[in-house]
Length: 223
Ligand SMILES: *Cc1c(COP(=O)(O)O)cnc(C)c1O
Image 1 (cartoon, protein in one colour):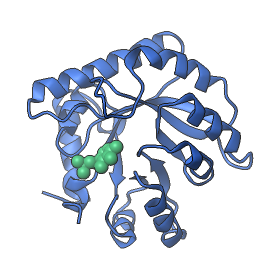
Image 2: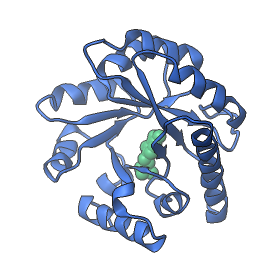
Image 3: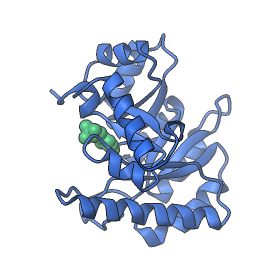
């Protein structure tokens, strides 16, 4: 089942089944590979947060949808020479995983804009080919991010290993949540745990996600 109404209901059910309030979990609509017109349809139904993983594609959509009050999230791999563009044109960057990128985002965030919201991406399953900080690197990056102008550290983002074994994914989500809780205990003022996608949002919600990023089950398969 696809579409915003179905997804909202699914998210509400996921929250209720683990005694969470549906208002605790935001839905980010991931429109990658879908045309701007599809994003506009969702906007007209009340969706405000949209995520993209390719800068060029995102910029094109931003131009086409410039009349809308969208909150834009970048969720893809960041090339450091592109971080100045990200700092100018996005509200959130969820995939920060290197000091160089962090410094560049801070340096290039225009003073006329609110601080850039960021999440640190964590490679929770230590996958070789995957972006993200290793768990033991997160605290130092959080400390660095908290001291930089033009940046507001909001939390963590994770993409666990793709597994058909639900218990494995659930364990990965729980491990991300443990790191998140530890940071909060250390005094970082965080409110965002971005985890869960079309196939595993129930598990992510159960493990404490505050933002699910959904593409396929909103827009259908990517063309
Ligand atoms: C594509 C993507 C999603 C959405 O995935 P679906 O399975 O289509 O819901 C979520 N997060 C990231 C980082 C993505 O690249």
